[in-house]
Length: 492
Image (tube, rainbow, N blue to C red; front, side):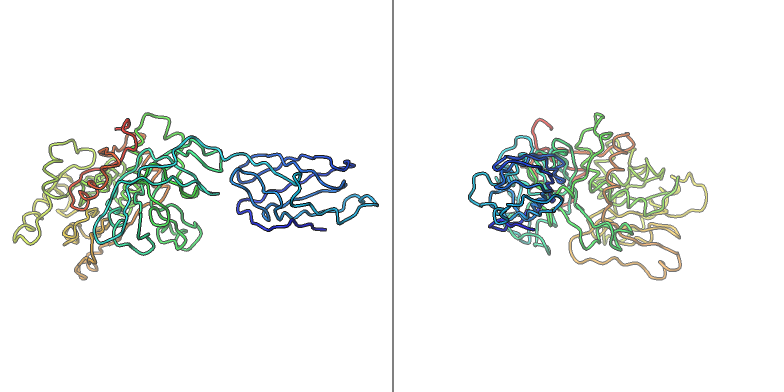
């Protein structure tokens, strides 16, 4: 027999079951039972006063009920009470009395625990785009901190990286992006301050562009997670990390293992691994580089570029030629660059007559020097283009030897095309591929390289209010290394 309450509302989180066998309880007796909430993994106490005495097992299914903001099941909700006959009822039982009065002060009330969390303000600072347009329009503003729904958490952002793609996310708007009050940023590391799951409170997590993929579609099983039709992206589907507190689905968080947090590594370095570092790792792997191979990194001064050079050299044992704008190379030459590049070369200026011939001659000499002039005179085994300048994608077939690999990572603004001689690609057995970024696993691998000291990102720390200026510098190719935002002045 089923008894319904007056109103029907739906509880959207995990179902809770109450099961109690009560024998010979007097009329009006108040009963308590333990409820196990599978979502919060806590046991709670349900207290109610039935109008009848039953020798029954009572199962309440609150997916037909609702929870109030303070965590209590509302009185008079439509909970289905199923009576399973295991013992004969009292012979004088009036079955109509099974109806629980909605207005009764003694109706069933299941007391859920308050949502756990740490203190945080109701308002916060954020960098947002009030109105999307053709140009960057980033401003510092004050916005509310959104309370987490079930399956969400509030993350206090400690550090967040700035990626050039955030500039692309902040104009347009692109398909699926909000037109107003858009918040960019997708390389955050922070601490959970509020969640319905008490076990993640206070823990450190990462937030990255590819927040979630299904893991079971034809693309996911081939490790093409960024092609998953069910993916969730930051800051497309989820507000970005250019804010002090971000409310995000817990399924999109990247747990940082305790082993990575036990040392004295600055968390700002780990932000470089979330997007730039993971992209660098999968790009180097795509080259099939072996010990002693020569790998050219075009755009070596950038966030992805210098990490690509470092991984190629320090992890894969390759010899690296770094290429970038001459203005940047002049600066890098005066700095310690040996961990990510063996030789630095200024990129040839486009459309300057003999500029390419002179550059190519120096490039071939550099390849021979790195091989100690052993073997055939030939170009590099691979080239990785991490630059956002279209001129960097010209004549890529001449960078590599026969059987060489060309890996494109950077994406210049506009509808651009690369041009490779078909006869060269076919007759010389060249391999051309593109890489958007790595997954969670690659991000954690790069963090491990950082924690063990194999690679060290070049990080420049800035404040939240500096983001608009730094984004303009990225658009105009005026930055070097990784720019990381510190949400607290004490972290500079």
